[in-house]
Amino acid sequence: MKLHEVRVHPSSARLPREQHLAWKIAGVASDKVAVGRDVADMIVNRIIDNAAVALAAINRHSAVSARDMALGHPRKGGATVFGVPGGRRVSAEWAAWANGTAVRELDMHDTFLAADYAHPGDNIPPVLAVAQALQKSGRDLIRGLAAAYEIHIDLVRAICLHEHKIDHIAHLCPAQAAGIGALLGLRQDAIFQAVQQALHVAITTRQSRKGEISSWKAYAPAHAGKLAVEAIDRAMRGEGAPSPIYEGEDSVIAWILSGPEAVYQVPLPESGEPKRAILDSFTKEHSAEYQSQALIDLAFRMRERIPDTGQIEKIVLHTSHHTHNVIGTGAGDPQKMDPKASRETLDHSIMYIFAVALQDGRWHHVDSYAPRRAARRDTVDLWRRIETREDAEWTRRYHAKDPNELAFGGRAEVLMQDGSVVVDELAVANAHPLGARPFARADYIRKFHTLTDGIVSPREARRFIELVQDLPRLPAGELHGLNVAMPAGTLAVGRPGIF
Image (cartoon, rainbow, N blue to C red):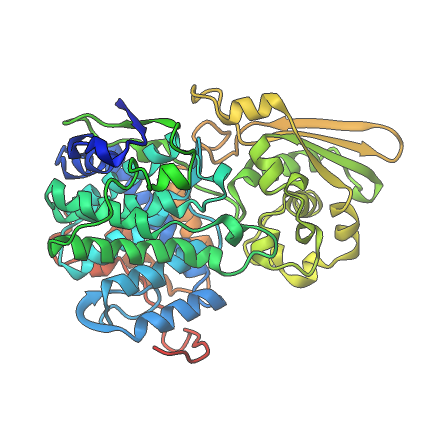
């Protein structure tokens, strides 16, 4: 890996194209270095993971609306839509929109956390949609996804969007464009323009994740994917984009991120170096924001020492700056304490999540968020006795460069009414690569079967699992089989719109 210094340059400097970060990103994407078997295997795992969470959300409102919009854009030989029979195809950008929304809806797919944070599995829907529409092979898809994950994770390692209240799709959309370019084997100059266009149109604020969180949280990555497909289409036709998009004096860094004096160090693979970043990401076992994963597992463990949660006086969760300020009491969001809050808000409230996990000893992607469950009197009482506090050591470990030091959990102090205190801590979730039970292929398949039980026919589930595990050998034109169809008559239809 090589570190690239990225900063603002005046227009008069006429920064050579070769010094643009977008050009260097495009160089990584256009480098046809072989993809390692372990990386290809993990790509298969994440395709299984995405399908699982998308199908579990298939008839939730946002997924239904996105699917109905996509089906309004049929295209012969196009891309497939989750749940819909494979013979029914739509334009690639609309498949990316529908499938990306379904994947993101339950907040249960993979994650990467560093200077910023990301769900790199959001790269899969647009890259797969274009691969299907343009009759690409399994190896082509693997090459494209390895590139998308690499670019996305490398940007997240180096550039913080959150401190400027910019939503994390600003890293996602350029990565999606780069991945599609790698899939298609485009030249560096075309990918360069697409990456710049993708970033230019993907800047949105974090209000989508603040206060009363709406369904746009699910739509945002899908919107990025749609924009990325369109950016590649424009670049393939020879169109340009705002440039230099990162370094210009009116650029993203100059006016939206840390300003004209800022200097970022962005790591990227050197020419001929394999793209392995996907191996540094990790999926979720529980359907909730990633910083809650270890704390859910911790609540399960502590429950054995707290037989009666009604005897709890107070709970303090000592954790990182990020956890405290985004999903904890440091956010200052009263909605995070409201039993009538949306599901999207509840899965960003560690106070609610810890209370339910402690009481139930389980976490379910539907039951744990049910309005009746959230409104239970004893839960509301316990929920409002929980607070978070930032701890410098947990913040340090959250940003640690040494992977063995990384921590996304915290320490829980439970003060009982009799004055006794129960204390325990957990650094990483059980499913994390360094956790008690790291996820392997069998776990991804189990997650798929658990989330799709009663939704997808056993025969269709077996077909998909068998096919996706043969991904490196799938010939051109066979990727439509990676769709999973629902039984006839089970797909919900939403309200009519324009499309």
